Image 1 (cartoon, helix red, strand yellow):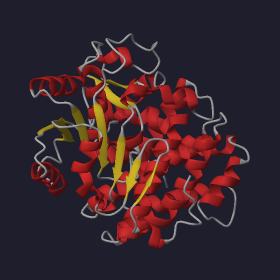
Image 2 (cartoon, one colour; image 1 turned 30 degrees about the vertical axis):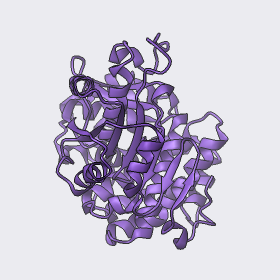
Image 3 (cartoon, one colour; image 1 turned 180 degrees about the vertical axis):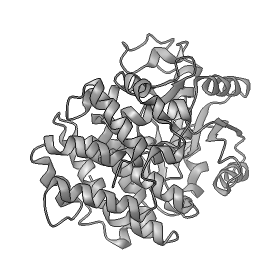
Image 4 (cartoon, helix red, strand yellow; image 1 turned 30 degrees about the horizontal axis):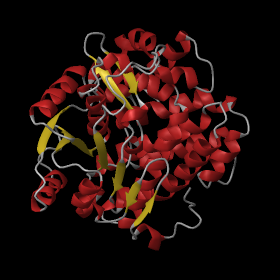
Length: 398
């Protein structure tokens, strides 16, 4: 595990590899090594998966050009929306088979990475998409090597999806998000290149950055003991607390971008332990109203923290220490969270992004079925979730 104590600014400008929980290549400019990585993993014809908002952005064009210059043919699939849908995954599978691809490179934010993982689960496995739903028994596969080789390249510092084998996908029939998972879709490599995040607009820097903050907080507060995940969560809190405002104010600061990218990755490692009610509610809001996931999380976060923090015991002290706060109290942590949200211009209510109050009962009912509800540190009844949803729609912070 990397230590923030040792992680000086010089480190964030260096190229360095580590192996936990998967092989990770960190450093400015590491995307330029993509052809070498493809050869290492025997990928000769990758399908590049991104979201439909990124298809013409410079990092996608650069990736395609790097592969072309190394005589590696590829095809771009960009039919993934901000909240990946089952019909989009099916379209991606058709593109993969039609192009006779032998691997997947996912580049973009969490939507692109989740969409690519879901695509990889189903394209050669002979198994229906929803048979990979997290709470179901592990499906019987055609073969043990049916999953494509998979490389992830995150271009936001928020989702932490680059190391994991899970994917959130919207069931278009039920209007609900479900978590899909299989260890076979754990990426072969994640490339963390902070240069790819420098052109991220201020609003996306904020939304994805607070998404990473939410991952770290919710994962650490999950009651069960998991020392590796807890350590990753607290280290992520240190990095995000230090660098988020800097990245927001100084978008070309490579140290801030690198610190946020590593913090986001570590928060993603942490949430293999579980998440909480922020995500339960956010998942269902996103499924119905197609809201940006990180922004939705950010708005809901203070309401859920007020609900949870008084019930997590000594963890308050460790959260406070990781965030470098002088007073280890629930009120001080919540005040700091709200100050961060104000600083990076997060709206105060879901109503400001088009979520109506009339949905509160429906959203709460669906959120109770979300896997993250089961790992929330405080047991919540449906009336609690309905109240939190209402607060978040009207005004989640003062």
